[in-house]
Amino acid sequence: MKAFKIASLFAILAIGTYSFTSGLAESKNPNTEIAPAKEGLNIGDKAPDIIMNGLDGKPIQLSNLQGQMVLIDFWASWCGPCRHENPNVVKTYKEFKDKEFKNGKGFTIFGVSLDNNADKWKAAIKQDHLIWKDHVSDLKGWNNAAAARYGVRGIPASVLINGDGIIVGKNLRGAQLKDALKKQLK
Image (cartoon, rainbow, N blue to C red):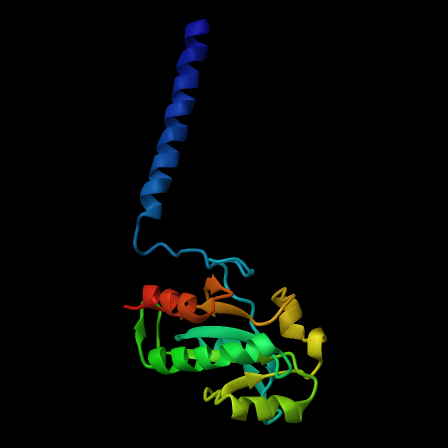
């Protein structure tokens, strides 16, 4: 009887091992779909979408930029450190806007303003030569919905996402942003 129980146990283990290893072989199949990244705020997560009004009052959607490297740049006209960083952001934009990346073509910026005054926000964009087209704000200051969704507690703040919408960097400034972009080049 004892020998029968041991033989049964080995049979169960053999079947379980076969099922497990055959499952591994199936996962190596190039036709097997890979589960999409979960939405979140960590590197490797799918960036949450943002839909907010642009300079003309019409909604702009972050996910419409999929296929490009995108820097989500949280800033405001009244923020000294933000305004000080803007020349670096402009220079980086000009350098990388037409580059080929592993997961996308081109680099752009999705500027999210924490301003509550449209005139000051628009004047700062003009003064700082923020030449990319996607500038958004809900004009609610620190109550900005996108900043809340992304857990922004101080500005300037940024999130770098690849062409698949996956977060590949956070709070990159100056040379750090350039280095992160270089690592993503094709």
